[in-house]
Length: 179
Image (cartoon, rainbow, N blue to C red; front, top):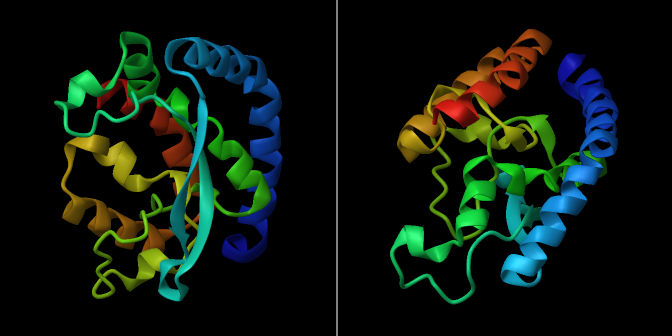
C-alpha cells in the first residue's frame, strides 16, 4: 500500500511544501546563474521506469559553461556554478518533476537515454519511480562506482518502506556535505 498510494501522496505534499519554501532560493539561484552563464534552466531527457523505456524531461539549473565538454572537468564551471553543482542546488527544479509524477523524492536516480542499462540482475531499479535522492547518494554519492549505485538501487527496491525513505531524506543533506 505504501508503494502505490501513500508514497505518491507524500511526494505531492512534501514537494509542494518544499517548492513553496525554496521558491525564493530558486529565484535567487536562477537569477544569479542567468547573470553568470545565461539561460539558467535546462531540461534533459531521462528514463522513467526504464523497463518500459518511458522518458520524461528532468528539470535542472544549468551549471556548466556551454561548449566546454572537451575541457578538464573543473574548467567547465564558473566558481559560482561549481558551488551550485556541488551543493546540489541545481537539483531544486526537480521538485516540479516530483509534483508532476515523473519522479519521486526517493528512488533510483534516473538514467540518461543511451546510457548502458543493465537489465539483469538490476531489473528492480526500473520498477520504481526515479528519485531526487537515493540510497546510493547517501552511501557515497559521486564517490562510488556505477556498479555500486546499481547494487544500492536493488537493495532500495527490496527494502522500500516509509522508514527507509525517511532515513534517506534525513541523511541526504549530510551526504551532500560529506561527498
